[in-house]
Length: 475
Image 1 (cartoon, rainbow, N blue to C red):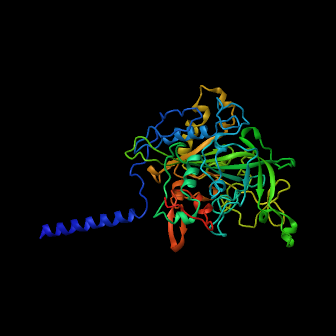
Image 2 (cartoon, helix red, strand yellow; image 1 turned 60 degrees about the vertical axis):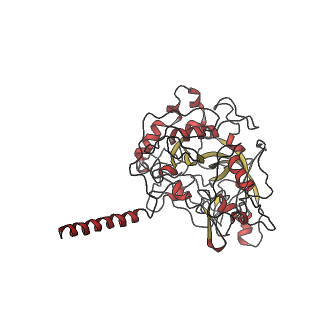
């Protein structure tokens, strides 16, 4: 009898374990052991070549992503001769275009008129940053090409009452795979059973996406006082013509009457404040060396403070996205404006409401693991990475810091545990939120409620469309 009782109790215990286990596995399970962070990490190589593998990894140590992320960031921002050929040093010609500026934008790739990129890309004068020009599956959904809207559909406004401007780029590997497979067309996506997968390109390497964030420094040919002194020497700057869509152009007549303005070009001087990288590469030290996505994100050091650091800020501290005089009261930090927003195309400030009044600046703080932040700040700023190269201290890149990195391998254990760029993902500062958690939902819903997963890329959701009289190849 005792044997039977013990057997029954044993079976009950096993059932409890199974039930609990099933409950846990309803979502992605993180590694049972937190990743280690070694203090003796390798120094990133300082050259113009993109790394093609993440070295020095193990299943329990994800700190290998940090030098890889820095090496990728520096290579992408390597200066060129204007024809795409890298210069000798990172500090050569501060005004030269960077390597990533020769990559294409989604609106250039998601088109049946596009051909595979067989020759080097060329930089053709002032590149247009297009607003609201991306294709959409629904008119109620903002496209990622809405270059002054964040992914959830709201703008970010800096302390000078100007919109933050966004730009997205694809490298040749990713662009060619979209073009040659006709993935820009929803009819062709319908032929995919469940999901598409990017792979390595034999000639152009591994797929890579970039999203950048820019603050408006000035209106070219129409300088106005923003009310806040900006040290432009701390930024990587560009001059761009931004096309403002007619429905966002502030014009009293367009608000008070039926007279509709037209799409309006605005010449702006912009300063880089955010740099987001998604790069699908192999990871050394793991059993499966198939390429997988690695995300890394960088910001300008003056973007915003970290929680709870903002409590002790002095009035002399100036941030692009935070005002110490206002502070972080309940409900006013990392909160988007929800009123109609228009773009003043004539002068700064650009962010105005329907009456032409300046919009309220967004109060932004970084919510993250402060111990990890201290680790990153101490170990991975350029001044400590390359002490033997004092020339780096004279470049603008000393003013940019790495905010974190993550890979599919380590799932919900990013560095740090809150991984969001304050200038690009301002409104997704939630517990356990990360690039992976967001991008794992990337998909296109086609007819009959069939979802095609798009390999962690949202470009398809906002850019792929149905082209009339279009024939999808059989292979």
